[in-house]
Length: 123
Image 1 (cartoon, rainbow, N blue to C red):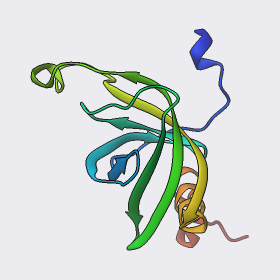
Image 2: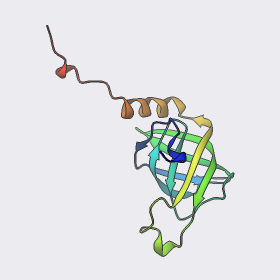
Image 3: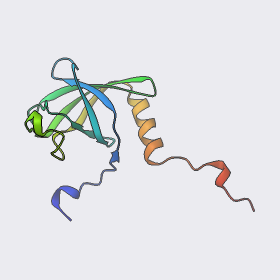
C-alpha cells in the first residue's frame, strides 16, 4: 500500500460546482472527490500549498460556506488541463461558516444510504 493511501478517510467520487478564492470565492471549479474533512478541487487556477481559501457551494439548495487549507497543488498549463489526471488541489476543511449540518447529512446519505424498506424481508 502506498504511503499516501494509508489515510483512513472515506472518499466519495462526486462532481459538485464550487466557488473558491483567497479573500472571496470568485473562481469556479469542480470537485472530483469529497470526504468529511476535505475535497479535491479540479482547477487550473491552483493556490499555493498552505494557503487558506474560502469555498462556497450548494447541496440540495442549501448554501455551504467554509474555509479550508490547501494541502497540495498540481498546476499544469491550461492547454493540458483536461489531459492530466489530478491537476488541481487537495484541501482540508478548517471551519464551516454555514451549512455544516447539510454537508454532514448529505455526506452520510451518499456514503451510507439507508436501505429501501421495500427490500426488507418479513418473517
